[in-house]
Amino acid sequence: LFDVRASGLENWPAPPFQLVANHHNGWDPLLVIAVTPMEPRITWFGPREADFSRGFKNRIMAFFGGMIPYDPAGTTMTSAVRAVRRVFDADGVLGIFAEGRIGFDETSLLPFEEGATAFAAASAVPVVPCAIVGSTDLWFRKRVDVRFGAPIEAGATRGREARAALERAVREGILELLPRQQPTL
Image (cartoon, rainbow, N blue to C red; front, side, top):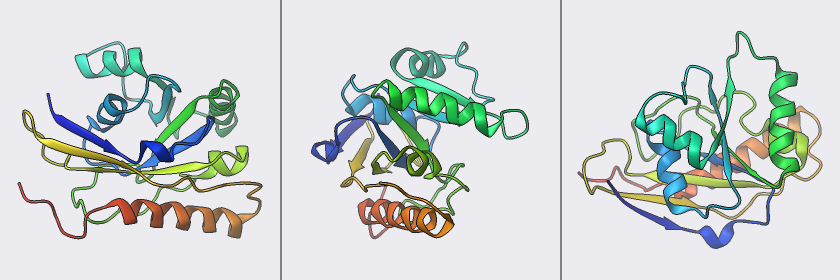
């Protein structure tokens, strides 16, 4: 459907690791899956309202990638952490859209949701920054670039200040991958 190209796949470390990306479109997880290897499998951490039993896009997501649905009002953090640990224990990749919602400016990032890098920090897995460029407005055969940055080691990140520093490093890693000016249509 789209002309999707990847750069920086050589930056992927051995799994497990966390992939943190910007977000412009509901198709973003599929665009990433389209350019990445089948293994390690990417399991996306996302909204509970996504029903993966209905709709073409959702069924593809369920088939090619996994999903950890999260409902802030109903999902406990303990159950979410357990699900994420299962991904990491299986040498998988956790994908998360740190902004938590769709943004429309391809040159900047919205504020990160609290805890965007918390799973990596708690599990001491590296974080790979990812920028999806060109997905704000999609049409048939439109070019979209999926860019992966160098992994950022989470190591033994303990304490609020260390987690904040990790989040800043990931944010800077994604910003380095974004274009300096808005792509032309």
